[in-house]
Length: 441
Image (cartoon, rainbow, N blue to C red; front, side, top):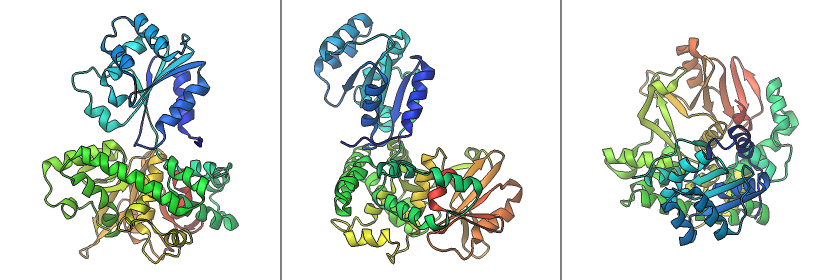
């Protein structure tokens, strides 16, 4: 198994150093994103000893220990006896992997952290963590971190480009184009767009150097997600909403049209959407009705766009009508020669990159006076100003929506960005920024 360098590792180190056992660490994220692997590696490297309890296959003896936490000396003695691991005070960690499967273990965190002898790390799905909490006390003594699919820089590290985005950052800070290096960076970005950031997909690419092998892995992950979605909603609505995401973005609609995917929208549909969001398989960008800093105040919970958590999965989902996605399609996409409009793919990519960089996703539409709408694809809040973003998949000629928005809300706007496939340049007050710089905005 290939171990990838992940940025969250440094945040986990910061938790260990600053917390000193006062909180447990909960690492959450979508399935197959690498939570268990990351936590195992962290426990092995950063502690003198560790016990890992995987609740997907834990023994009955270990599970029964959580039924009575009144005597922690008894609990720790039997836990060490069962696992054969000697725990050392303040130098050992106990990992609860897939903790959502054992609610009593999650409840025990409160007492274990108060005891203070060891550190505790949990991994789990946010959706099932929320579902499996009836009749238990939810621990407040948790620090929560989210693991996303590999971001673009992590993907570069994984594929042997150890410099990552180091030089790109320098060009960004100088506000200069990359010049001769731009085409190579765009090719690397398109490769990331196709393979995606799911660890199994990246490992398959590295081991096989074959897009069909990568596509097979991605289809297995999508099938797994579909199974999970059917558990969320046995009627199949969640599944239909999921598979309709590429079509919705392709149609360039100003919001996700629930009715076109599943028929009439009901109150229970919103519960399904909320559960899908909690699963972190999908990402929602909400409409900001009054675009300003503090966009949460005007967040329209009934008006949103749906994106996939990983653009590599999105590409495969877009070609789901085929039993597999041909290598020729991947090669044409990699060479940027496929005739299909790739705007929707890049929009999903930008959403993924912005989210991985710690941004919440908002967008804005307003009428153009001619029965159509101007649309700002994404809005960022920076200090006291807004930074509007327009996404263009190919060469730009105009950025009318961006211009009209900046004119309408001139006092609120700071930097304004056009994200596209060409090199960095200025067009008046608009910064035209290549896609691979998205995470630096």
